[in-house]
Length: 370
Image (cartoon, rainbow, N blue to C red; front, top):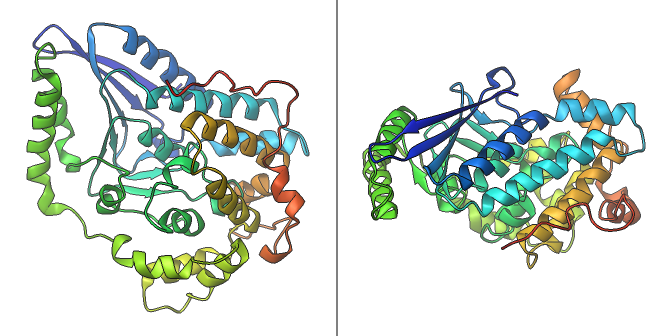
């Protein structure tokens, strides 16, 4: 299942639950067995009065999690062309249920988000109550390259970024550093990669029966004070005004055109964003525009219900399987999109991604924001 679970005793009779993603070879890509294992154990820890808090971390130095296990999903899609494979129905339902539950976790849930934190990994991080980034952290939603779209609650958290930055992050697949994550409220604390052991040592020293919140805050603050001199410089906020102007347009094709013209820009971040669109999925860009348009006033549970519909439809249509083939299987980086022109994608094809692929009640109807 590639998840390790540990319970460390504290000095005051409680225990600290530690869940470690342990699929280093795949950059800790989140698979269905990992989702199910996390859901089972974290639910048990939440109900265990002797577990004081939970830490979510990952093995290896390269990544907390570079995303979901999309290869297996894409293979299932190729085996069921034009249909929603059973694996997709189960994978996305279980993943979104887990993330929704973690958003409402009743105990402190600390996520150590080092290295690559992308796609499903970023969604998992955003579910935690205390999100820790390090000098190595690189956050991104790169789904535009594989014909999917930013899911795992991104309709909710990208919409909460200031101005047009959420749209930019989705369209450009740009990587945010630790300072960006803090600036944009995608992270809570900045610690050094070398301070994880000190954090765990501090957690077992806390007296969880008396003013635990204050002690936890003091621990994190003291560690962060040591780390702050190594905090990187901001990338996105200094560029917000220009990005807002670029993307202050009426529709997605205009936004695509605005970014595409920046290939020779003197700003390397914006030039990279333009280069990304050279082989990006035009349909995904439309889905990003539409999901952000629909989601601003949705509760988180409704966001996951909308994304479940979108995800199943992405599995039913050809772009996702082709994107994974080009990027991760054959690695030719030359996806042959079914709809290669951003201005020529039928409105009906976009709208179809928001239509149920089932009859009757929504499979996630029981999700609650309480």
